[in-house]
Image (tube, rainbow, N blue to C red):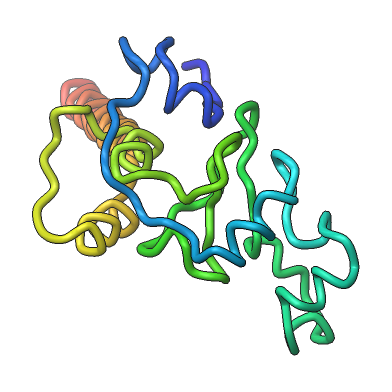
Amino acid sequence: MILAIFAVRDALKKGELFDTDVPPSEGQKYPKRKAEIMALVPQGGYWRDLPLEIQKEYMKKSFYLGGGKTGMARRMSWDEPCLTLTCAPAQKQTERCHPEETRPFTIREYARIQTFPDDWIFEGSATQQYKQIGNAVPVNFAYEIGASVVRFLNAAQIDQSRKKNAA
């Protein structure tokens, strides 16, 4: 089995995983000042890539605490896997900014990153839909785990039958 590592581009653009670019959908927006700050973060970057004074403004007291806080003010890269999605794409500790546009991922982008098919229907408000997707195991990952369990159980059954027949 060949392990494939997919990047954000693979989820949102037409290619090996999906036949079309991600369909449009609603999504959360950043408040004005946060959008101004996030616009300064380069693709693949995070709060430490901001000018020092803006780092302090954005991080507030957290600036002086230890730890990397690498999920804060985080802009994804087209060419890298996405960080784990959470239930709220625009919260300070969990934001996942679009690689090019200064905004959180839309609901459909979130779903694509989790490898849901485009026709999968999520119910409820936008907040509830983000939560459903953020709490989900990626569809393709769940499939591969299930397939591995089936292969293991089939191999164990064959092995047990061989031992029984040899006796």
